[in-house]
Amino acid sequence: MSDKLPDQGRDDEEVLRDLQRFAADDPDYRHGRLWSLVYWLDEAHDEFLARAWRMYASANGLNPGAFKSLKRLEGEIVAAVAALLHGDEQVCGVLTAGGTESCLMAAKTYRDLARTTRGVGRAKMILPVTAHVAWFKAAEYFDIEPVRLPLDDALRADISALESLIDRDTVMIVGSAPEYPHGTIDPIEAMGAIAARHGVPLHVDACVGGMILPFMAMNGVTLPRWDYRVPGVTSISVDLHKYGYAAKGASTITYRRLDLFAHQVFVQEDWPGGVFASPAMLGTRAGGAYAAAWAAMQRLGVAGYRDLARRTHEAFTRLCDGVAAMPGLRVLGDPSGPLLAYGSGDPQLAIYAVGDRMDARGWSVNRVQRPEGLHAMVTAQHLDVVDRYLADLGAAVAEVRADPALARQGSAATYGMLAQLPLRGMVRQQVREMFVRQYGRGAAPLDVHAQAVGAAPGARGMVERLALRYADWRRRRSTRA
Ligand SMILES: Cc1ncc(COP(=O)(O)O)c(C=O)c1O
Image 1 (cartoon, protein in one colour):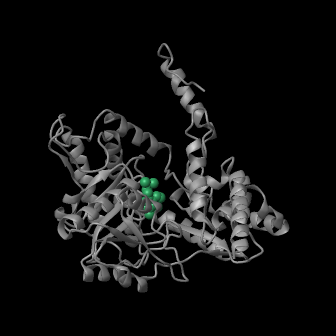
Image 2 (cartoon, helix red, strand yellow):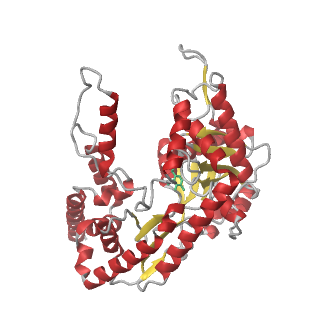
Image 3 (cartoon, rainbow, N blue to C red):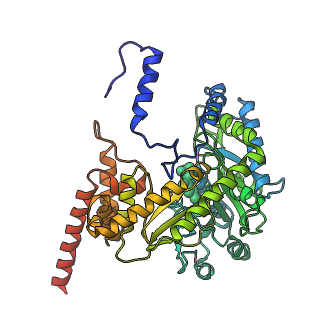
């Protein structure tokens, strides 16, 4: 490991060879083995994105007045996305660096809208428990209390509880199209009607769905309405670096009207560096991300995205059907695509142990919890591998049935305990400590995807310590009683 700058600059080719070498153990996203994180088309598309990026690699979106080219790209991207969402010409917005930034911005916008127009001090946002974790991050960062909408038995946001949760301090409601854990589209029309009746903004998180659901609908897939056609919807986030097949670092946040967006903007008029205004979280913005996103959209066009949506939906449907037909497994909730999660319908079959056996066969699958399951963010390239995946899944299930002890080994045990241990504050503290430790000098990196904490070296020990503490806590409590 190199821990300081080389004294002399190194040869270009040697440096690039190093970069290639470092990636050798990264997940294999080129052959459909990875079921999250990367939305990969093919080498030609990658090369095209790299060329577009290179042309704007030094351009900076910090000041839209300076790089007018970037402002133009942003304007054209936002207009194209707004049209896909059935927005009228009032719909406006900006490019952000990712879904999380888009979500954070909506939360800040509505907090400030409520502060300025209604004097709300202790802001609250209502969100289904399945809303992406970015919303919980937004709540923590911007000091907004998250008010959780529970799920019904079908793992849908329980809309019947929504109205009673709204009060004077509610600054926004969040719905997803679809939500990350199970791929379910929240009942946006019903949420929109309630939101409009109470004058509360409704944001639709379509970070996953925004660049695929419109094309699935064009292909004839029946979907509930979730976009600007729903009157109560005031803003929508759509990622380009997911199903838009842009390079990483590109998402959009759009608002129904400019006066809503106005609350997203930051201005500092007294800074010695000059009077400053900025539309979103970041300062310097990678011009390459604008260029690659715009270029991807131009390269694919409606026909290209429809074709990708068709292949993705076919892979998704085959996966859902294959899982549903497998004794002991069940699809969780009612996914619309493009993603799904599945769990065990048989108490003797530990789904996390099945996950370990899939890992052992070279598949990279995420775990979900409450209920426990395995996750699949399906993309077009998975159509080529879905049959192999299902065959391996069948074999993994058979292995776990033949050896139930597998549930108590490997990461299955850790994930299971992490999901089930009570005293969640203690779990949070321990995970935080473990996560922080990887940033100490010389520490080995954890798998940085939060849901993979259970697979990280050291996680097992951490969970065992937690379990001991929990047992101790219970003992002390029963002694007191
Ligand atoms: C529904 C949803 N919203 C927001 C995000 C956050 O997106 P990003 O990882 O680009 O920040 C994700 C990521 O998967 C998501 O699934």
